[in-house]
Amino acid sequence: TVLIEAVGSVSLFGMWDDVPGRVANVHEQWFYSIFHSISAFCNAGFSLFSDSFVSYNKSWGVYVVVCPLIVLGGLGFGVLYDLINIVADRVKRFFKKRFNKRYRFSMEAPKRMRLQTKIVLSVSACLIVLGMLAILLFERYASQSDSPEKTGVLGALFQSVTA
Image (tube, rainbow, N blue to C red):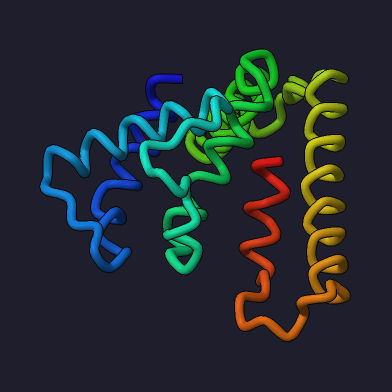
């Protein structure tokens, strides 16, 4: 978890000056980045800003970093561990096949996803996509559909992930 949160913090660094009137020095930017990365990964829902992320609704970089952190944190340690093992096995098998001629004809079966991992990934994807589509649909036919602040696809995705 620390590695994922650290990557999220580094990715968020520098994105906090995108809102006019909100200028953060380097220490504040690091604090905002670390805090929001941990908050997103733990699905805590905390924000240091009085309007949450409303001021950043046009800053897609924040959404692109925060959404995967929320999803990865929501998958759980068992699923993340299984996915890491599968990716590591695939990488190991690739290099063994590439550089070890005896291994090319090996009958060793690759690691497979556990049933829990398949169910969690499938249900999570369905909930996120269906939620996003519902938000887009309801936003399209809302009574205030003439307003200039229509939710785009990325905004609907962010709302679906954070719901």
